[in-house]
Every structure is written in C-alpha cells, then in structure tokens.
Image 1 (tube, rainbow, N blue to C red):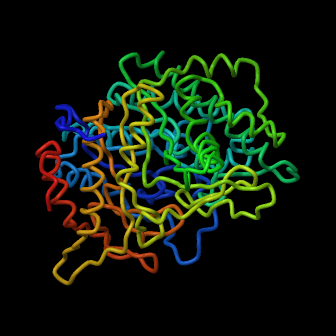
Image 2 (cartoon, rainbow, N blue to C red):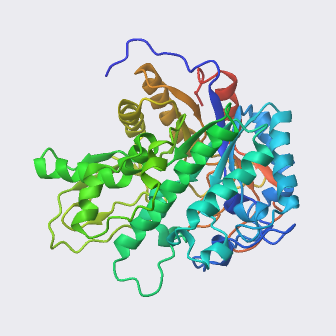
Amino acid sequence: MLNKYLKPFPENFLWGASTSAYQVEGANATDGKGPSCQDVKELPAGTASLDICADHYHRYKEDIALMAEMGFKVYRFSIAWTRLLPNGDGEVNQKGIDHYNDVINTCIEYNIEPLVTMFHFDMPDALDQRGSWSNPDSVGWFVNFAKVMFEAFGDRVKYWLTINEQNMLTLVGPIIGTLRIPEGTTNILKETYQQNHHMLVAQAKAMCLCHEMLPNAKIGPAPNISLVYAASCRPEDVLAAQEYNAIRNWLYLDMAVYGVYNNLVWTYLEDNDATPTFAPGDAEALKNAHPDFIGFNYYSTATVQASSPDDDLDPGADQQTARGEAGYYKGYANPYLMKTEFGWEIDPLGFRANMREMYSRYRLPMIVTENGLGAYDTLTEDGKIHDNYRIKYLQEHIKQLRLAISDGVEMMGYCPWSAIDLVSTHEGIRKRYGFIYVDTTDEETGSLDRYRKDSFYWYKKVIATNGEDISD
C-alpha cells in the first residue's frame, strides 16, 4: 500500500527500550536470591558468566538516569522469579521485593512507565528440579508468583507482560537453556507441547488474576513473531508457509486472544501423537484470559519452502534461524535480505507486514517489546562508540513502524532491544545491542563504566520529536 499521507505517532506513544533480569542484573547470589535455571546451566564456551552481566542490580539508578536522559517514556524489564521467591514458591524474600520497589519507584521519579515482564527464561532451579513446566503444578507456581508481584507492585505498574517468547521456549528451548525433558521420555514432541500447554494455561490464569486484582492495569503476551514468507508462488511452498506461520506464530496468539488451539497446529500435533492433555478447567481458563494488548518481539521474517517426509532437516539453531520439519516445511535463505554479523536476516519491510498481519488477525493494541541489531561495537580511545549501523537498522524499522500506523495499525509503543549492553542468550556480551555501552567483555570483567553510544544521542532526538526526526 502506498500511503499518500503519513500519520504521526500517537501523542502518548511509549518510546523506550528493554532488558531482562538474568541478562543484565548479575548479583545472582545477592540479597537472598535463589538460583534459576540460567544460573546453573552450562554456558556456551567463550561467553561471559551471568554472575555480573552489566551489574544492573547495583547500578540501576545510574542506568535509569541515562534512560531518562534519552527521554524514555517506558522501560521494559523483567522481574527475576527467584529474587522474590528463592525456591520458586514458599517464603517471600523481602529484599527482592525492596529491590524491585526501588527500580519501579526510580522509573516513576523520572516519569518512565514500568513495563514488567513476569517470566523471561528464568525458571527457579528448585522448581526445575521438580519438573519445571513438565509438572502440571507449574501452572499454580506461576499464578502464585503473579499474585506476589501484583500485590507488591500493582499499585504502580500499569502494564504487564506474561511470558517472554513462549514460542521460542517451545521451539528452541535447549538453546535458551530452559527446556527440561524428563528422563525416559519417548515422544519428545508430545512432552514439549504438554509443557507449552501448561505455560498457556498459566498465562491465561495470570491474565484473569491481573484483571481481578488490578482492574486498572493492562496485561498481554510477548511472543517472538516472524511472519513467514513462501519461498516461491508454487502452491506447495505457500502451504508450507501457512504451516510454519501456524506453528511458529499463530498458535501462541490464537490461544492468548481467543483461547483455542490453532487448527493447523492441532492437526500437526495429532499427526505426531503429540496433542496435550487438558486438566479439568483448562479449556475454561484459556477462554477467559482476554489480553488487553499484544507485546511482540521482532527481529526478522522467516522464509520456507515445501518439505518431503524424507528430508533430513536441521530443526534450527536459534530464535531467528530458518528451521525445518520434515513433511511440513524447510527453511530457505531469502536472497533479497541482508544479514547481521551474527547471521540474522534484516527485513524492515517485513516488520510492517508483521504488524499489519497481526492487527488484521487480532485487532488489539500492540507494543514492540524487542527489535534491534546485535553487533560488535568498538570503544574508541576517546570513549566513543560509533554505531551508525545500529542507527541505520533502527531508522529503517521506525520508518516501517510509522507506515504501519498510517495503515491503521494501533501501536502503543516501541521498545528496542536493548536499553543497555547485556549478555545475549547464547552469544555472550560480544553481541551488543544497547544504546549504552558497558565496559566489560566475555573474557574478563572490565570497569563496567557506562558510555553513551552515537545511537544514544540519535534515539534521544527521535523521542524528543516523537518520531518526526529520525535522521542521522
């Protein structure tokens, strides 16, 4: 669509950025925090430990002040489950409550809206040992955690996100370090989707609880959505794209918004003897959730072609790598797209297509909860970081965001990944995303001093003009 007239960003548009607790805070054994699955997992060789990260736990006031200097309207961060409940359930750790009270209050002092992610890849190790999401009790664990958060912070937090990238927890859980398959499991797909079902029910019940306890708050899911293209106009490729769109994307939003399993996914699970078991009350809980908005992470689109049952396929390495399921679809490198230094395709126009398709399907307000460029940044001798490549990436995506708004898509805000350099899920701190540079490396802990990147000053201008000036 050619828009003759560009609509402005909404007056109350929420400009900001995102982090997650286990990737930015450090201080993993501080002030009563219990270990999470991230703290005890075997890290990829050559990547920084999670003991320090950016030390945001101790330096959050400095970091939030820098965010305020950029003009943030919102800061999306997650709450570490084991800071509040060291064993996942049971006794509440008051020092954890106090810490996040301070973080939230600091945001509010700067007129920054806290956008809280309830679960970001950090299942308590004590609950992991009891089966993690494999255990049907995980639904109750999560709802109890939600209740603790709503009681402690609900008087100030207006916006909540349930589970970050649940689709990635399901599709690439071993890479993220979050998927526990019980010993002796014979049908791994069935076990995986049973765990996914428990997450879906937990999310739904947490949404209902939020609406009950905090009637003025808003809550929504936060999947990673990558619109899937067909590799060609060959009908078989189009069907393959529909399959992968359903498995990767629509299952999670169909369930969050409508409370029903996507029909193509259910058929796929039936074909593989992998349909989940519903506990009494699950169907009703799923139907009653009613999110207020959709948060979503976007890095790129995906492209697939048809696959035969005999194909020997790599199921995919990480969140944005082309995947395959023999007999359903197989990944295809899109020749029209450039890639980042870390191999992820770059598709700003796909960002607009993503938003248009989601809004057409669900008709809920949306906020971008992640979007960004991971790159090797260099700190110069005079303390500068010239990340024009990041500025270019964000410029092109913000252009498409405004075009989507001009298309009639209801967008609430934009929170790139990430506010500050942090430890990437499986590629360490060398894969930098932040507007703020942290002086540390995967090989050794540095001074942890903060430096404003060129993108810091650029994004400050974007926010100050409410997206009108995105020039270099």
